[in-house]
Length: 348
Image (cartoon, rainbow, N blue to C red; front, side, top):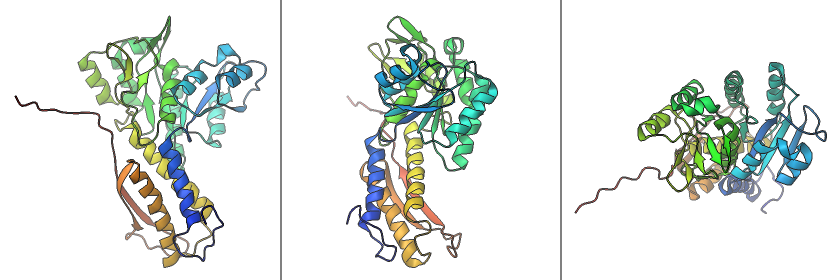
């Protein structure tokens, strides 16, 4: 029965096991279900306690807790599409050791995208890159979004240099500032909106050409400058004459945000469900191995139906023997991208 108890002595295709993977896949496809943005908040009122986590889902909740004048980054993340924001309250005038403590605290929390509270600090960005990579090697997957200040936004070459310096599959670097009404926000200040966009976008959708809630960019780039920005792996906005849009959804390694988020989702879902249902519960024999492979294949096939990937295959890795308490699987699939460059030949 779907959602029923699981018996490891049962036949390989168990509705209960399959249900777990279908639910995980559906959450990723629908978008927003995993859309948590992590923000270390710099300023807040007396209702909040220093070095404490708070989860907020609405502007009212954030305003009541932290004060209306302190929540612009939270509002941008929610406006971008995040389901909620995981806030960590930083000490007043934080020192380097406070940022270390903040990152250590977030290690024990679940979130999908990390972004600073509108601040630009090149040293902390470098340490964030190291932290993001370390978490990936330890099995925790998230995107970190960074940006620049007004001076670097004015010169796209400086923003591109930051992309090259922070090149990684899990880092997004915004190099465009924006104008919203009478206010101007440099790229670090507006980076929380990009974090919310990434967190709230389904993994079978692209952030490319997503509309930005701004009236203009602070620096309109030329075609040559756009080419240089995309070649560097920068996340950049364009004013098309009527609206502001994301030019292309890239991480700093020049991979697509869409593909990286899909990889993160697959790694996270398979690991979590294996820990919950398989590890220590299945016999490491042909039947147990088949049960595990069938469930993983079912999850990937659900993603295939929704256009996240194609051609999934799951099998035992022939290069390593699956004996004792060790199982080695080989998983393959083809990533599905969005149409982003359309070439038309007109014959007259």
